[in-house]
Structure formats: C-alpha cells, structure tokens
Amino acid sequence: MQQKWVVKNKKADFDAICKEQNITEVTARLLVNRGLLTKEERDAFLHPSLLALIKPELLRNADAAADMLAEDITAGRKIRIIGDYDVDGIVAVYLLYRTLCVAGAKVDYRIPDRIRDGYGMNAEMVEESLRDGIQTILTCDNGIAATEPIRRATEAGIRVVLTDHHEVPVEETPDGVRQVLPPADVIVNPKQDGETTPFPNICGAYVAYKVMCCLAKKMGIPDTFMQGLLPYVAMATVCDVMELRGENRAVVALGLEGMKNCKDNGICALIEENQLNKENLSGYHFGFVLGPCLNASGRLDTAEKGLALLLAENPAVAATLAKEVTQLNAVRKDMTMQYVRECREYFLTQERLEPVLVAYLPECHESLAGIIAGRIREQFYRPAIVLTDAEDGCKGSGRSIDGYHMYEALCECKDLLTKFGGHPKAAGLSLPRENVELFRKRLVEQCRLTEEELTEKISIDVVLPFGLVTEQVIDELSLLEPFGTGNEKPLFAERNLKVKKAMVLGKNANVLKLFVENEYGRQFETMYFGDIAAFDESVTVAFGKSELDKMYQGRENKVCFSMIYYPDKNEFRGNVTLQAVMRDYKMAVL
View 1: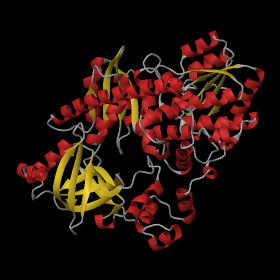
View 2: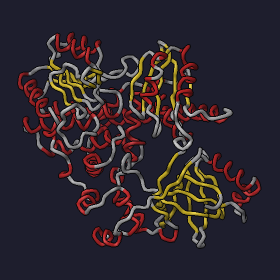
View 3: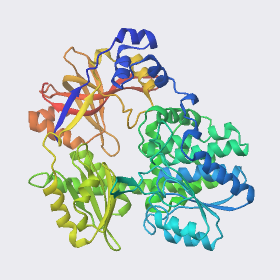
View 4: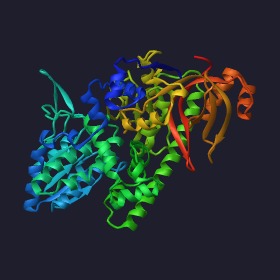
C-alpha cells in the first residue's frame, strides 16, 4: 500500500502559547495543529468541564418529549422503549430505562434481533406492543426512517416519542429536496430541519440522555444522578465514532473521570473481567475493549444480554454476564481475524489490486461483515465491501475512504440490489447471490478514484528526534486525551534509523521489538504491534535476506528506515524506560 507522509507546518507564536499554558513547544504545536488558535479555545480544550455541556432544552423538542413522558408517568401509562443492538443503542436504552424507573414509570424495553428483526422499529414490534397494552413507544437510536410502523402505531392509538440521531430521509419535490419525517407525536433528532442546538453531531445515547435531563428537572431527579450516567454517554459517543470536538470531547473527558467513582455492578464487572483499572481508563478502552464486548452480545447472541449486564443489581449475576460477553467478544475477534487473513491472502494473489475491493465470504456471520470490511479498507486503503450468505440471498457491509461516496456508488448499482442504505463512509446492502460478480464488476468499472486518491495520506504532527523525547513531553500528551475521531492521537516522525537488534515477542509472536539508533547516536527502544511478516518482507526487498538475518542476530547490518511513532513510557519494577510505538515505516533513507 502506497502512503504519502505530510508534515503539518502551521505557524503560531509558540513561545507565547508555552508561557500561557505552561507547556512544552511540542504540546503547543499539537494544540495549534488541532486548530485551537485562541486562548479561550485552548483553555476549553485542556480543561473540559460541565459548563461545556450544552443545555438539553436547546435540543429541539427535547423538552416537549419530556413533557409527554412526564404525563405518561403521572397517568400510569405503560411505556415501551425500542432501541438498537449496537453499543449506542444498548446504552441509549439503559439511560432511558434507568431514568424512567427512578421517575416511577411503568416501563419495559425491546431491542431488535440483528438477524431476525434487522435494524430498528418494525411492524411486528408495533403489533406486539398493541397486544401488551403499551400506550407510548419511546424509540432511541432509531425510528427516523420507520414511517410505516410509526403510522400503524399512531393510528392504533399508541403515542410515539421518537429520539434518534441518524440522517432524516429526503424526497425530491418540484420545490427541491425536503425531509420526510415519520408521523410520531414528537421527534427529537438533531439532524431535522429547524434544529436549535448549536452542536448537532451527537450519538443516539446522548440525544436520549438530553431528553432524560429535561425529564429529571420536571420529576425532581437530582443532578447528581444524571451526572452519574455520563460515563455511559461517553462510552456510546466513542463507540459510535462521534467526532471528539466541542461538547463530545467534554462529555467523554467527564465520563472517563466519572468512571473512577462509578460503583454500578455491571460496568465494574466488565472492567474487572477485562483486567482494567477504573483509574486509568481511556477512550481506547471504551472503543476497543469494553464497547466491543457489549457489541459482541448483539452480534453473536442477543443485545439484551449486554443490557442485562449494565442493569445487573446482583454482583454475582454481573460477573457471570461480564464473563459471557467478554468470551463472546473473544470468539468474535478470532472469527474476524480468520476472515481478514483469508481476504488479505486472496487480494494479495490478484494480478492487480482493484480500486474497490469486494469479498464474498459465504459462511461468515453477517454481523461481522462491517468489521472485516473496515479492516480490509485499512490494510489496502481501498473502499471495501464484504458480502455473506443470508436466508434470502446475500447481505453485506461496506466501509469507504476519503473521496469515495459509498452510498452514491450503491445508488449507481441499485438495479442489482434488493435493499441498501448508508452514508459516504459506510453502507449496508442486500442482493441476490447471482448478482454478486456483476455487482463487483459494476463497482470497479464505475469507480473514478485516481492513483492519488488511492494513496493514503498520513499527517505527521511533529518531526521529533529521539533526543527531544522526555518524560515531560510524554506526560503532557495526556492533556490532549481523550483521543478518537476528530482528535486523533498525535503522530511523530524520526528519520534514518539504523537497527542495532530486533526480536519477536509475545506468546503469539505478534510483537516486534527493535533497538534503533538515529543519526545523532541516540538509541531508543521501539515496539511494533503491526504485521511483522510484512515488515520483514520490506526489509528483505530493500536490503536482502542476509541483512534481515543479521538484524535479528544483533549483528551490524545495513537496515535503515524512517518511522511514524508515538512516544510512551514503559514502567517495570520501578524503572521507567522511554520507548517509541511504531505505527508506520518506510525503508531506506528519507
């Protein structure tokens, strides 16, 4: 895969910023790279507080939705929450259910089965609600596209309070494009026309939380209770890949801080089962450790198991459920790795790499298609679609790159598809099995991506020689956390490194440890958690097999490369060693 490394070179009075914030020049440059050009912006970024959270009443219809729910509670009406099976949906149901229970509501919940029901509220759920005497349906993280089920519910006398954050469907009219809203009694969705909140790009769980904050004020629920729910909003925000800017970054930072004092049995059991420490959690742990365990319940079992874990009042029950969802995630990871490896080997054997990659994995669990597509996109920097067999044909998910609008690409193939939907960067689809190859050819033929667009661009924050890496610099990097989409982990570069010695570590031989030396004679430990075989192949192609052997034997060799890295500290038995964690590399001198 080709890469283009670009060093950010933004200008500012770095000396003034260093004095203003009492930080090193490295951190000052990182703040400027993030577009924080005023003191007020830098203060808000470095010191997030509750004041950064926008008043929930500014979210259009949030207060009206709370009024309707308060009426239901007072009148003793039966409320049913209908959520979604991913982390955002599970957490949204959790937030609604817990708050409504504290408010004294008669409330239960339903989460669709990923395979049987598909995404969101459907007609059968409405009929079930009618049979159960439900008087109000409250959706979260879904509903904005469920026009017909909602129409059936309202016509049958069920009130519908809709909370969602997905794009509103549109239609062409003689007067232009207009949004098509379902006939719910009240709609809370920051993507609808006329929205009044200044920060609309929030996850479904955060939308639900804001409605509950409005309800809490009406029902006398203390602020401390609502603030205690912020760790869950934070996890949903990270797992739903929201941009960690403005209010989102503040809520994640506050949620991580609040997790230190959280005593809820379910989340504490999940943290313990994954051998984590509440005191040292980061956005990474939300997005890549805890969140995937909840997601795995919705992928390979039932999302209600993940919700049951969060709601568990008995520590023993919580421990059992935490173990079950963690084991499910381990199975999910093994299955994912198997199919990613299979796809990678297949594409590497092709004469040429197509600009759009389509993999057909008949036996793969359909819930894994999106994860695998994402991994293939990362490895080859190509739009990727993974298709699997389903009951009525094939189902699949796609993940895209900059410059390729996946939903529009599917629109150009709609005659081959049974069903599809999505966004510029992600999509889901169904099609007959006999159309798979034709679909692949059509996507490739219609792809307009240039070679430049198919070259991954990596933005380097600072070229930072090892001699400038200090404990203070590393410690200050924590001021920029939590990292995630829109506030990515900083990337540093070091040029022309000689390898003094290399060794492979880990019980699965999946960690490469390098002892490298820069042009000024400064030696540094470097850890690489990527594809070691590919690294070895790059060394062999550039310098020869004999030099690779010498590198691993610790003998003098000709291996020389430049790398993109993140500095870190390794603490072992009281000793602190500075090290680099390598993300990418280029062989030979730059």
